[in-house]
Image (tube, rainbow, N blue to C red; front, side, top):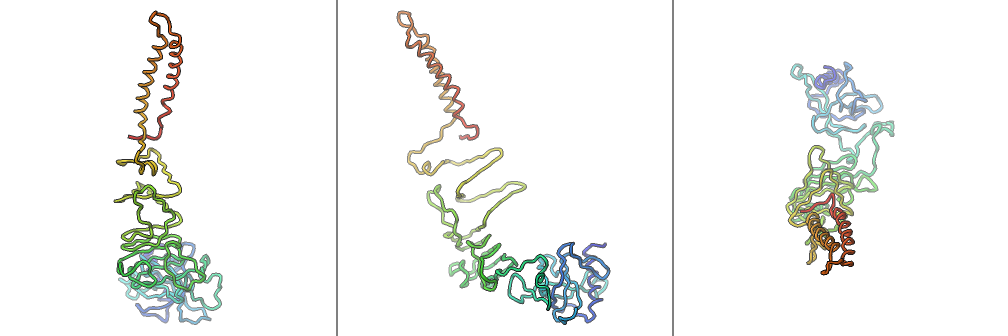
Length: 383
């Protein structure tokens, strides 16, 4: 059973109870400073019996303990098994004593569990409160870089906001606000979901900011009745009779994905794009590569803007039909050449001019016949 989280979890309570002589009542909220956290197997936190406690376990000290003396240290597990917020070193977390898996046989079996990181500084990046004489170079952890320009987000009324430590954010909103450029009287209360990976650069990490789809590194906007402010990098739409509304003009139910590079990969089956009206692709170049074949089908296919807009449209020639027609013509000319070579006058004598021209024509016909294959592509076919 060694190494099993169920077993190890039951051991934490015994360790805590043996150390916590002052004793905190089960269910009472506590606040502790994080001094160690096990995020992988390279950092081990052991119980009193020497068993390794699960990944995610922290060691904390009571925030109210004397700062100049070594306070008692306790382990604590994440409270929620599905959604976990891992603290940095020297951050203060909310804790509660709760039952362990041994509660059925031992009603006094309790563990410490940690949940929320206390918002001491109002920063989404970190809220560390180190003890005196803490090594400033490792205040947040050995490999954690302190970023001075990670700003908190302005909240809109009724928002649910999730903010990451490196400038990521998820906003679920829909109510009107002075800072909310997506919502006005016409769509107040309509839902939107904004996902941003990274944020605009500021000269401090204090001021509140809002998302900027044009400046944030990567964004996914799910809008129900809103107009995006996205400025498209390419607006060429010459293949349309009526150009579609731009990215910053359309109002309605839409999903917008914006980033430095977009890569879609269907690793097991196919990728499909389906639209009721049209699919518009525009870039400096459009490149299509297929292993077996590339097929385009429509009632009419136009190659080039003029082919679509011109009154006198030029159709594509059918290669096989053209070859058959030219073969018939060459066969006829070949017969004419043979007749010319053997032509005689009404007196039965030769006709020098025709007799000489016949072989010359026949040679030309043979040469042209060898060139018929040059008209047909080996890769491109049409109906």
